[in-house]
Image 1 (cartoon, rainbow, N blue to C red):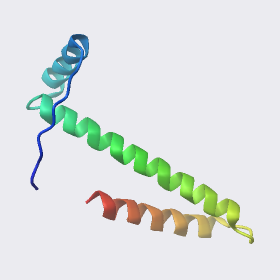
Image 2 (image 1 turned 180 degrees about the vertical axis):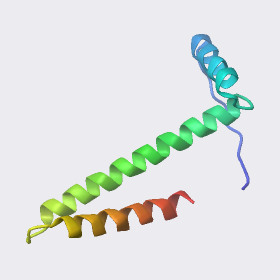
Image 3 (image 1 turned 135 degrees about the vertical axis):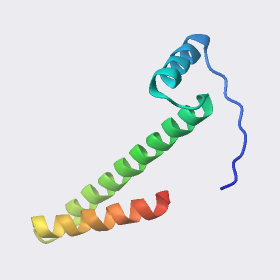
Length: 86
């Protein structure tokens, strides 16, 4: 996968914290740590969006939603999120 370079300005104290984590957790460098942190945040936001969409769909349902229906919707949403992440 091709990557693009970006410029990121951080306060010195923030960089000290990052460098400490990079060293203690075994990351190769700052870039690897930051890339991983951004990836985790993106996954968190996408999951939150999917859960919100599920909640809205559940609220719009005219019929009572059972556990089986909820599990099927959750599974479909999870598969959708996974396909977008890859």
